[in-house]
Each structure stands twice: as structure tokens, then as C-alpha cells.
Image (tube, rainbow, N blue to C red; front, side):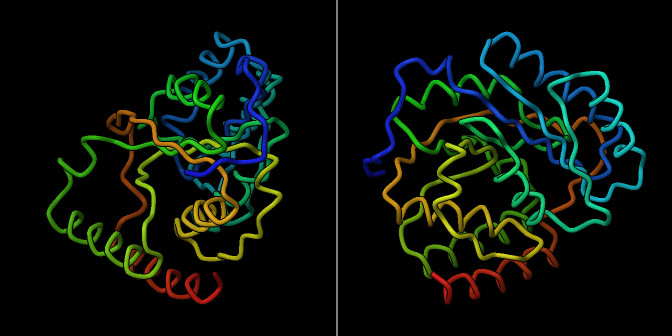
Length: 242
């Protein structure tokens, strides 16, 4: 959006990458997702780490995460003792990395790991890359599309112009420490807060199109009426804080 004072290296292959994998009861897909991400990172050649954030899973995926950390030296695990919700997972995902770039992937397999090199290439010109999904919403149920429209409308009313974003984001990890995140809810509002605070810091934000795959297993855990109403309440709180 605007120019940042942060310099962008010419050679993005030197940038280290932290991929946080968000896991809640995804035992059937977790190994495949982590190993796909690791394979792409190894092919890229960048320094890297994968951090599995296990949000109080009860299906054995927490134990599987520990197994993966023993098998792969670049994998580590953060365990939430109980299910704290998506907001807490994002907060840990934003701050857990030790590398220059950070991103978060769900453990359900909906996003191809090749998004990672696609996004990293943009960091000659960006401080944050926001994914957009051209086909997003086309196959969603009418009620889900309506709720999504309501959320987008409220965001525009309360915050004005806001960059398009669906799915995956990537950011310069050190810049996270320059903003104060206040959102504490269980939903995705902390993502939106981070974007807004980056905008106010005049950090450079660009969009990058991605695809969206079917889940490997299980059912969606967000976008029900309860979570949407919770998100709307958090939007009002965030508006008062910004």
C-alpha cells in the first residue's frame, strides 16, 4: 500500500521462513500437510522451521504433532492445554517464529504448500502478502455467502477501505513486534487487526491469488452463526480500540 522504511533484500532465497500449522482435531490430515510443507521448504532451500500449534485437540493429533517433531528436526510443537479458539492460534502463529518471514497454514490441507514460494517472491516489494481466492464463495451455501457479505459490509462501514484477503497471509516477522495487538476473541478478528495496524504503519501490503482445495477430512470449524456473531461483537470492540 505505502512504502515501508524496512529494506527488502534482492535475494529472497536468503529469507528464513516460519510456517505455523494450525491444528485442532485434524489427525487424518496433519502428517500429510506437514510433510508437504517440509518438502516445498526443502526444495526452496531457504532456512525454515515448521511450528505446529495444537489447540487442545482430543483426537490424537496432539500426540501425532509430537511424533512429527521427533521425526523432523525443523518441526516443533506448541500445545494449548484446552481449545482456546482461532484467535489464540493466530496470536501464537504471529509471534512464534524465529525466521524473517512468517505464515500460517491450516492443518486441513485446503491450501497447497506451493503458495509459500509464490508468496516469498513478493518480498522484494512487500512487508505483507495477502492471499485472494478468485473462486472464493462460489461453492458456498447461500446462507454462508450472506453471512460473509454481512461481515465484509460491517468491516467497510467501520474501517473504510480494507485490502482484499482470503486464506493465507505472509508477513515480515520482526514487524509484528512493532504493533500492539489487542484482540482477544476466539475468531479471526486478530488477523484483521494485524492488517489494519500494518496499514497504519505504512508497511507495504500486496495481494497474491491462490487456489483452494477441498479439505482432506473433517468438517469446517468456523463460519457458523455463533462464530459470525462473535466476530461482529469483536469488530465493535476493535473499532473502539483503534
